[in-house]
Amino acid sequence: MKRECGFSLIELLLSLIIMALIAGYAIPHYQNFLIESRRMEAKQALEYLALSLDHYYNQKQTYEGASLDQLHISAYTKNKDYQLIISHASNKTFSISAIPQGSQNHDTTCGQLSLDSYGNESASGSSPKPQQDCW
Image (cartoon, rainbow, N blue to C red; front, side, top):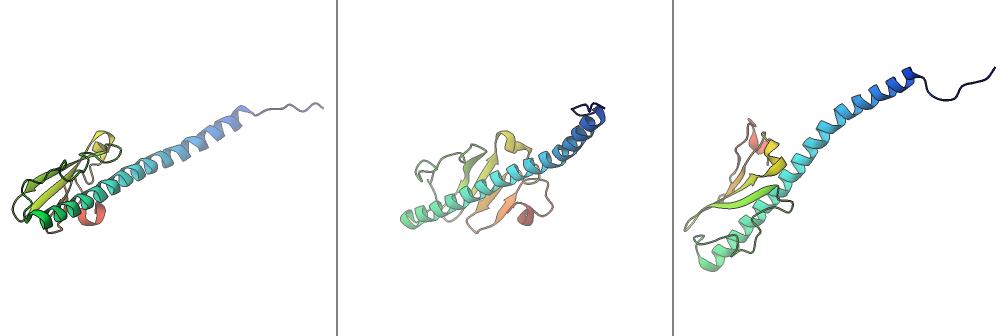
C-alpha cells in the first residue's frame, strides 16, 4: 500500500484556527504594551522637563519666561508620540503637559499627562484612577 504525503484539509484548517486564536489574543496585548511603553517615555520626558524647570528657577528665581528652546528640550518625545508643552509658568509655579500624538491618540485610558511644580500628576483620560493607571 502506497502512503500519501502531505496534510489533509482538516489538519490545515485546524492549524489556521489555532493561529487565528493565538493572534487574536496576542495582537491586542502587544498594542497595549506599546501604548504603555510610549506613555512611560512621556512620563520620563515630563519629569526631565520638570527637573530642567527647577534648574531654570534656581538660576533665575522665577519660572516665567522658561521655554523648551531655552531649556534645550525637544518639543516631542523621541518617536513623536507625545508633544511636550509648558502650559503655565509664573513666578513661583509651573504646569507642564504631554499631549498624545499619532497612534498614541488611541490611549483613551490616560490621554494627556500633566505635572505641576508641586508634583501633582494628572491625566485627562477615562481612567477612574489616573494615579495608579497612568503614573
